[in-house]
Image (tube, rainbow, N blue to C red; front, side, top):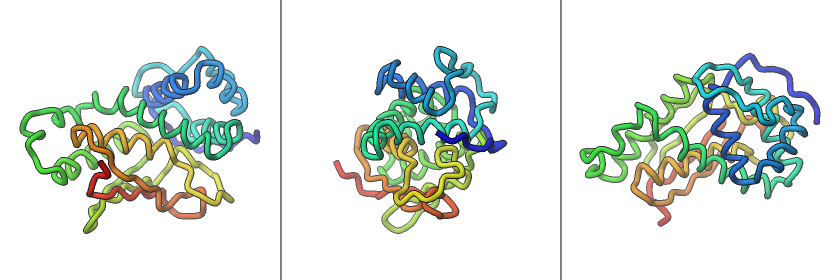
Length: 211
């Protein structure tokens, strides 16, 4: 696999470590080791980044993991694994952050559903913007919320792709919405992606849950 040029933008070590542990959970240690070797990241085998919030894991390397995932399992197989890893990543790390801590409080639980999402989505976006070089914003529209990643660690420098590829983010958002809403499932659709030539990666979240 071709080496992706370094970006100079970084993911927090802790986020990368949790993502790698999530991939190990969904595909097994040998499966992940094969992905890391294919991505020219064999140095990470049995040597995940430290459990701290230092920004030290280059976006290019995070992207390389996801390119290797697609190459090894095919777009459809890679998509399923990335969605599952995204959900596991949220369950392992984000809900423990201070910005989301109040989401478990009784005062939050009695809010209307849309009000919960109106609080939870920007709180999550703020975490990414504060502890990684991934800048994220949220806007509300009539029947949806739109989560925008302005600098994406998953499709860095990728081009010539015919469909959006940031499935780990989709899975993470799905898990976050399920948690914030107390167990409901929401439709999350990546409508724009830098890998297909868009300027940003954008995720449309329908206000009405599917279940």
